[in-house]
Length: 133
Image (cartoon, rainbow, N blue to C red):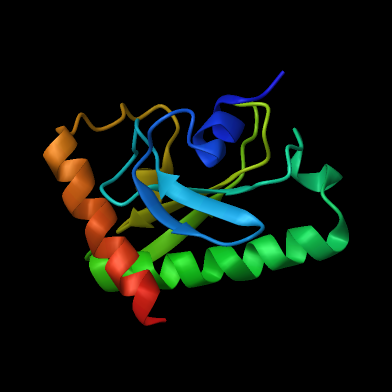
């Protein structure tokens, strides 16, 4: 069965797309820990990140680095935190979260409630920065 992320990658479900390559898709998390919280997923449908081939995992980290640079250029923050949890959706993914303190990445913090227009503005800002890289 296709995961929700596979459906997003295929365009069957809407998303706030940041970037796309032949192997990866980056989009805003719809329950963000911070403004600019992005998910990077491989287009290959693999449940567990460490089941990806070494080559694909390495490429995914390099791709995530470029997305993180775009986030930090678009969203004021001290750093872009990286988290791999992998239990919430059975599809490998990396969370990239703009942070100013470690507690910004606490999973018990409630997600932000943003309007569609705010998601669109954030996605456009990060995508614009990504295109410059």
